[in-house]
Length: 326
Image 1: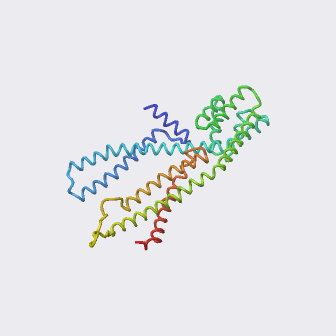
Image 2: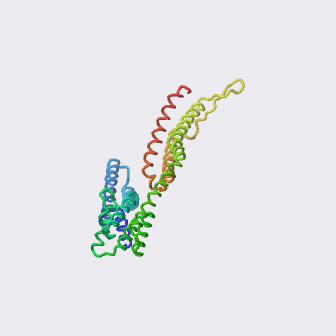
Image 3: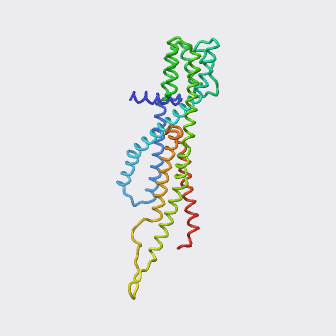
């Protein structure tokens, strides 16, 4: 239990929250109870208006609500909470990496001006550095309180799953231990970070063709093909219902109205496929352009909404154009 609390506290610190871990647990538990109460009141209202249900059936349903459904909701809320925390940690890491090179160059300039390393880090903080500014302020407060600078910097680097940040901090610590020119070292680190960003942008530009192809296939081609298939199924179903096959003098009618795929079921299948395709396409595009799967989270709603809307539009347009066939 204590290990779980420490892990939750660690996640909250990485996400930048100052809320106690037990308060988060209490909020999630109370929210789960509130949702279960709403469901219970609704079921009780339904059971009171329809008296055909027996006491045993009502008791069994309420048992499922407060045991099975309660545990399921609790797990889902915790998963949603960790998902949100993970996204916030990712955004904070991206924010730190974006301004790290500029911060190191300012620190290098302060060191060359004659400041010690701890004061150079403090005076290099700017409000536009966002998350990095807050972290450096915490490092400065720890060092002013008597904490070792190397230990404070290591804890700062360990809070973020960033290879760029960890390498930069390790090089800084090694430079301090070796007694070298820290100003030149930080300036070279900043230049390497900027060159690495430029290379990533060039690689992203080189794969733009693949991104355009995947986006077109997902947002335009897939909804259009599913709309055509839906209308084709509608045409074939109506033709089979009206088909008469001659046999000699008499004619007999063949009935194809047996069980088969309905238009409604096919639309549900098409929308489900479009949602799944949009999800994986956004992840693939994010991996190609950014090198991070988490960067594709923002593309998922746009892709899903676009594909479904276009599917409905294409279905309406195709239905109007070819409606005179039947």
